[in-house]
Image (tube, rainbow, N blue to C red; front, side, top):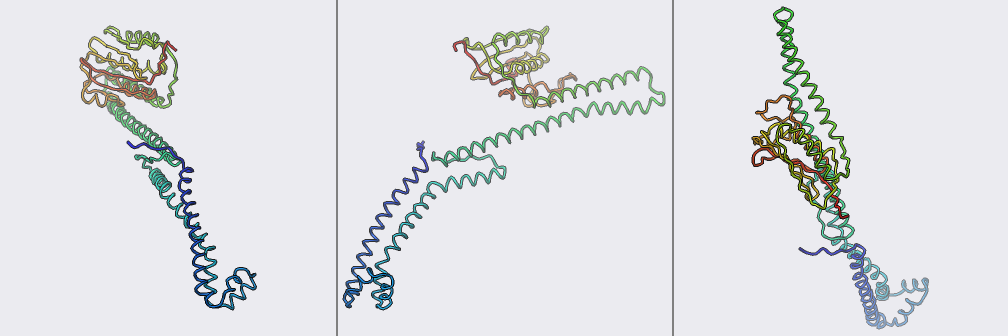
Length: 396
């Protein structure tokens, strides 16, 4: 790879202007000597040979009036001689302007045109909301720094737009799933209401049947209430800001152990913690960590036959919680959609399960700079939650 040399526009300008000065001086000397030579040659051949020996000095030395008078009363040879004598006063500035203009053009084409065109093109793409590109400019000067800063701005806009788009798509998917699941209890309630309106006035519904229908309607209403509570909880997740705290590894171990045993009830619970010996304190939001942990363990207990295994590890600044069960594992569809809102496996007959647990865990992990992954282990399902976590060593 070619090395990129650090430079500055002011030194680049000096690099270009120095030859310009040299070429300008050389040109001025050439013009001066050239016009003097032509002047002497023309004077000797055309003015002096025609008896105008003193005209040369009269033209140069006399005042303006005398000069104009003599110029008007002399021949064309003397006029040409005067033009040659004064040509250098016009040619020298013109030569300097030409050198400066050419230098400026070369400097612009070499140092300025490419970055300016790149920035103009980038600004046009950004104005058209096209952010999937990269501004590359190899020279490390002021314009190179400007291009890098512009590209950083472009990347920040790209990430913000991507995050906003993902959030909008997530909200659309959540609302769609909620509307779909909400339709079922509403349809049931509507059916029961039609049944009661049709048969109760006619006295065709026994008291026992009426109580049974009302009980079913009450169950559907309770389910709708639970839906509302869940939706409110999900909506509030967007406003959650992690509160980073320092807590010890022993505290984490104790909380995970107590919560795991409590949730597993009569099922076996096994905990393994893999953290370096010199790490005593962790830095993240412990409440979010425990909320995610409780959701994952509760989900594992639902599918486990006899045992739930938890592995806690800290590696590369990520706190990892892996929860495994010894059940049947995730189906192919669940591996892809288990962390989608309101997803429920077709084999799951638990109507109190709304399919929001893993979805909420994924959102919370993202809030803490981590992620959620779903897979199948050796015997059953496996869910791993990761959190961005600073580690504080004992040897500080």
